Amino acid sequence: MIFHNINPVLLELGPFQVRYYGLFYALGFVIAYFLISYLSKKRELKITKDDIADFLVYAIVGVVLGARLVYVFVYNPLFYLQNPLEIIAVWHGGLSFHGGLLGAIAATYLFCRRKKIKFYDIADIVVLPVALALALGRIGNFMNGELYGRLTDVSWCIDYSKNKFVENLPSGCRHPSQIYASIKNLTIFSILWLIKDKKLPKGFLFWSFVTLYGLFRTIVEFFRAPDEQIGFLFNYFTMGQLLSFPLFLLGLYMLFRLKRKNDMH
Picture 1: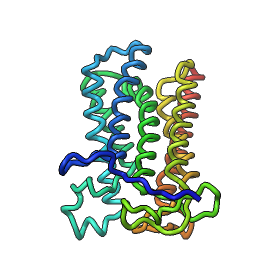
Picture 2: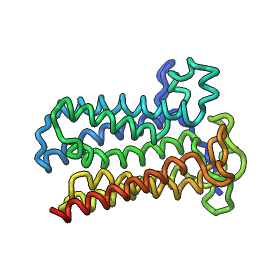
Picture 3: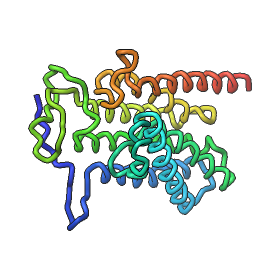
Picture 4: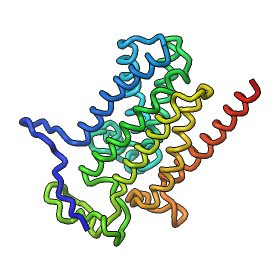
């Protein structure tokens, strides 16, 4: 058993707080900038550093809007219908990865259309820093004591009940599902990194990310506590699984389609 007694606030400057969660995601965007620069140069894409900075602005807006809207309308619609002003209160928490993915795809499409770049030229690059940023973000979730796991008696389980910095944390010893999720995303990054230089059809890296994320997220959700306002669906599955497994199937279908198209040529 491990006791979780981490203060999620790294630094306080008067009324302002620097939290681990925000710091990790900021670090993720910094890594994204340099990694996209490196990979675009290696693939000889005609995009400048200013273009990459512009893309990250598109991506941030797309991710936040998509993640928030899907969380509002899928995860907790009744609460937000009764409290519509809370929809814009992103600082209170409530973001959905699946919505963020849709928002990121839309932002990438708009950016590529504006810059006259092929969608997969950017999408095949972006998924690598995305996987890293997600891994860092899950560590931030662990620091915050959120997205915790299900009750368990494994020797590495986490007890949040002794934390004096965060209120309303759960009782009992639980799976460190945030760490599992971080390892999942690092594994996805490693797989994509190993195959990135192989002769692959355009779109293969992007759909590989979608497939791997959908599969691994479905598995990791078996160790994560369901959202309180939703609970288990069909007495066993979480909302995350119902959204992730179709991603896996769609990604698998698109990979087979790309391979078949490539073989025909």
